[in-house]
Image 1 (tube, rainbow, N blue to C red):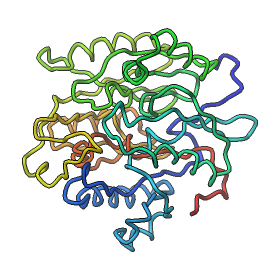
Image 2 (image 1 turned 180 degrees about the vertical axis):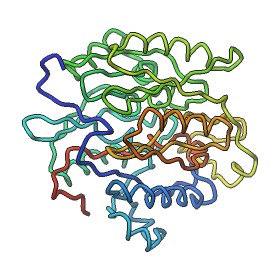
Image 3 (image 1 turned 90 degrees about the vertical axis):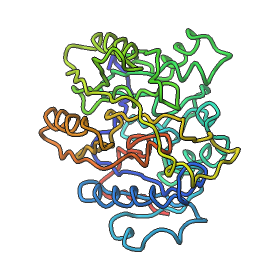
Image 4 (image 1 turned 120 degrees about the vertical axis):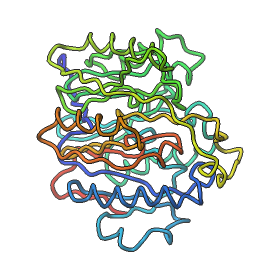
Length: 353
């Protein structure tokens, strides 16, 4: 890692616990968040067979958590604005046997959500519980903008960072990130998938599954709205070290929500107006992963089985599952977005309230 004294901890690092959060927002999750809660509950149950799980629960909604869920995961009561933990919690690194984090300024994805005060405080609250130091970068961005292999190679979604920091030039942003991740090799990509509410998060386009394996979204359909973006992304990925296996996974065309899926949402001023016209991004890159497990999203599409087969083939040593994820994309994200990997935990370290 070019002599770096830090070791950045990837999603698949050893000795970890997976963090999820309990949905409650009626302006993001339909039917008072009941369908989304069913997805999270089932996900927690399945993942807990392979990786310890901790569930964040807002104090106003403790009573909505099924008692049986306490059998498969620990629970922390904490205030948060929404369940997108990938974006609001720190990137972790290890230095001199101590695990620390870095977090960015958060503005609700450039205005997608305006109720963000609790999410802004969540990283520091978690770091206190873990007794970990936390530094703050002055750039506005989110964790889903980055993917790295724990060995010094990073892909960075530059477009969303530019959008969040309009007063800074592209070169200033790059310099700040190179300073932040000193000693690492950063590969910047400018572009976004058409249905991506984040304006270019990398975890919808490319994601490292281990030190030597990267999956990325690709379509060969020239009529696909993301054909040109995927082509440019593939060209950048070819510049990564030869030691990295680059695996293309099909990208379906964006879907549309149904009237029933939208009619029970409360249209408030605190969140993006989610109408039937707002397209749904269905990316198989947006997986949940730990050191032992990968969970691939299902969208009820023919590509579901193809994507699952590809990922199973490149990860024969891991358990690879699939779960329905349409409910998550209705809220604007995916499996990677809702999950956070707490790597670098000691054998006897737990996360408690």
